[in-house]
Image 1 (spheres, protein in one colour):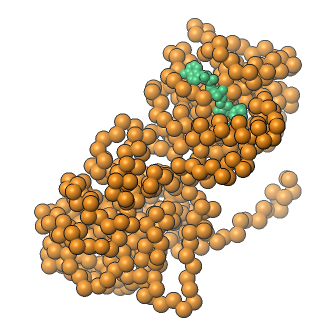
Image 2 (tube, protein in one colour):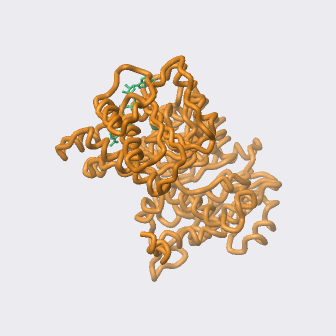
Image 3 (tube, rainbow, N blue to C red):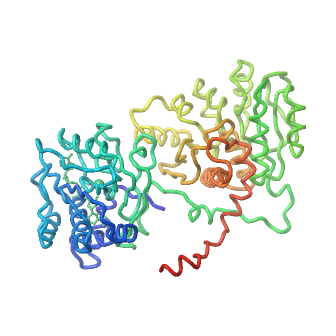
Length: 514
Ligand SMILES: NC(=O)C1=CN([C@@H]2O[C@H](COP(=O)(O)OP(=O)(O)OC[C@H]3O[C@@H](n4cnc5c(N)ncnc54)[C@H](O)[C@@H]3O)[C@@H](O)[C@H]2O)[C@H](O)CC1
Ligand SMILES: [K+]
C-alpha cells in the first residue's frame, strides 16, 4: 500500500476536483458520509454522547459533516468549534452553516473557556487538526488536547490524531491526541508507523474518500506499507526439476563460546526458508553442538577454539549471513577485516559484525554490493550516529544506505527496509517477537532467500514479512510472553502457505446480517 506525503494528498484532492468537475465541498461531503457510515454500522443508533471537536480548517469541516449526518440519524451529538484561528476555510464555513439546519449551534471554544464536561464512557471525535497542521499549537489548544486525553473517553481521530504531523515529529510530545481509532483518509501516513509517533494511536483504518484513482495509481511514493498483496508477486515458485543446488548454498558465520545457539537458530531458519544447502562456520567449541542440534547442517570449524580467528573455507556459498553470536574479540575483529578484503559474496551483516563495522567504518567500503545490514536501534546508532527524532533517523539511514549502496533493515515494531531513498514498512509481526534469538532467525531467513535467487532488496522485504507472519501465526495458543525464536522458525512454513490462502468465505450468520 502506498503511503503518500501530505503534499501528494493535496495534489490528489486537486486532481480529483479537476477531473471529476466537482468541488472541494462535495469531496468533504463524500468523506463525511463515509465517516458517518463507519460510525452508524458500529453504533446502530446507540445514544452514547458523541463529542465532536472541530478545528477551523477542512479537518474540522469533515467533523461538521459527520456531526450533521449523525444528528440527522438521531444520535446524541455535541459539537464544539476549537476556535484557534479566524482564518476559517471556505468548506468549514459552508458546513458550519449547514449544521445549524438541525438547530444546533456549536459551542465555540477559545482561550480561557472552560472545557466541556465529558464522561469516560462517552465518545470523542477528534477533528481539530488534520494534515494541514503546520506549526506548534497555542497553549490553550494544547491544554484542550491534554484535557481530552485525560478524559479516557474513546477517541476516534479523523485523518490523523490532532497534533501529529504526517511526516514530522511533534514539537511538544504532550500536544497530540492519543487516539483509540484513527479513520485516516484514503491511506495511512508515515508517522503512524514510527516508534515515537505511532504511540499516539492504537488502531487505524483507511477510509475511501474517493480521491482520483489515476493519480493514486500513477504517483510514485517514497514510502510503502508491505503486506501480503505486496509480497505475493515477489515469491519465486519451486521448479519440478529443481535439485538442492538450485536453491543455493548458504553460509552462516558466527558463534563464540556460550553463544552457539545463535548460529543454530540462524542456520535452522535458513533451511526452513528454503536454502538448498547450509553450512555453519563456527569456532571449534561449537562443533558438537551444531552437529547434534541441526543434523541437516554441515559444519566448518575455524582454527580458533572459542572465537573465530581466521575465516577460511573451500566452499562457494551464494550468500553469507554473519555476525550472530560472534563476539568482538580482537582476533575476531582481525579475522573479519581480512575476510572483507577478499570476499565478494553478498553478506547479511548482523549483531557483532555490525558493531565491528561501526568501530572500523573504513571496512564498510569492503561490503559487497547487494548486501543487507540488519541493525536494531542501538546498532544503527553506532553506525549512523545519534538522531534527533525518528524522521531524522530515517534521513540519516537513507544517506548511509545510499553511500554504501546497501539495504538497511531497521528492526523494530514496524521494521523498515531502506534502500535507494525508498522506505518499505513491514506490517506483520508482534510484540512477542521481542525475544532472544528473533534477530538471528531473521538473518538466517534473509541468507536463505538470497541463496535461492532473491535480490537483496526483495529478500529484505519478503524476509521481514515472512518472519513477522511466522511470528503472528505462532502466537495462536502461545501469546506474546511465551513466544520464542524457535517458534518463529517452526512457523515459517505456515507463513509461506498463508500467502496462498483463499480469503475466508463469509459465515452464514454474517451473510444473513448483510
Ligand atoms: N479527500 C480528502 O483527503 C479530504 C480531506 N479533507 C480533510 O482536510 C484536512 C486538511 O485540511 P486543511 O484545511 O488543509 O488543514 P487542517 O484542517 O488540518 O488544519 C487546520 C488549519 O489551521 C491552520 N493551522 C495549521 N497549524 C496551525 C496551528 N498550529 N495553529 C493554528 N492554526 C494552524 C492551517 O493553515 C489550516 O488551514 C485533511 O486532514 C482531511 O481531514 C477534506 O475533508 C477534503 C477531503
Ligand atoms: K484530527
